[in-house]
Length: 283
Length: 185
Figure 1: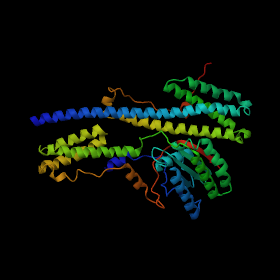
Figure 2: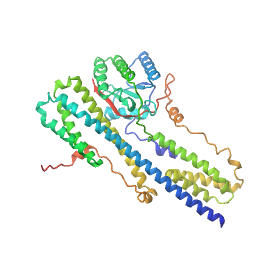
Figure 3: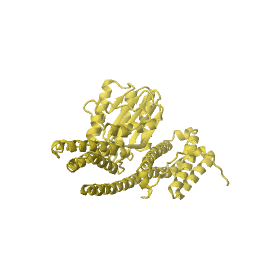
Figure 4: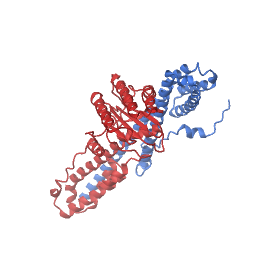
């Protein structure tokens, strides 16, 4: 199991911070009151339009363009609902004096790059120039809200199932399936008194459904199973209870992974994606 | 003896299942790569559609830069004539280079920077360029995954027979433009 997790762990080019909620203020631009006010506002937008808007402030960009950084954060956090991809990420890099609005696939119609640029130029930058970070952020978010609400249709047909989470879940399904199948076959192998066959079957099963790693894991499981069963020669008796592993849900894994540090009951973003839409600006 | 026969039949069935799984998996992966390429092309098309607007709204100011505008328009025409993936990729590279030059030149005209329409168009173009970079990066990731699948043992033995071969990465324009280009016209 551990091996599988390690194999499919995504590799990021740079460190992406975890989120504290809808607002993640790493640069400390906001007062406590403003932060909770902003979070409330964003929660309200979510409740009214299903769109997930996130704000991230950082001191300094890692060795990357703000465009690359924003899309990476967006992907990792999964802003927006799955399939709808209706997320927005506002990134503010304080020392670089750069700001970006990253738009998820599903909101590209509501917030075009031109509109995103206009929000940055007309709402955010003028305030940021005067060090009014709170005012600028709120003005930007309010304008974003207006554009989202003006959008009639928010459905989006671009769906993508090929992310790391999906492949992890797939691998797990393979394991579960192989596990069940093995248990089923165990009744046959238990009578053979040999234990190698179980290993071979496990290995082949793994290769059918996935890759070599899964094959080897299943081979080991199969070997152990058949070994125990052949030794005891008791058929299925000892294994009835084991053959029912918990049902695996992609959502439960994802949200529990993100729960750490969540504030005011915010359970995590929905798993939306972005394709690099939006606009950037400097102040 | 009887048991041995069972095992052999069992293994034959499993090998058959493995082939089926392999084939279906490769078909799926192949389709994913194609879908991702379609996304790249969507962004190319978007860029293609934006260019006339940008040229139209800035040409009055950019009278001195007719040569650059022409090169953008020419590259765009070439792209519209391209049919294969390879041709399209090459033509798109030319559009990218010409457009990049135009955008740099436009920075020098304050009257364009204060024009809201031009600004919006430039945002749209910048956004499109970024999308192209993102989708192209994802395309390459998928191609990488696909190639690993096709080339690793034991898939590599069978994949060729099933008609799957290694796919080519999409190289960025930066890499392409470092190669010297010779023009004989």
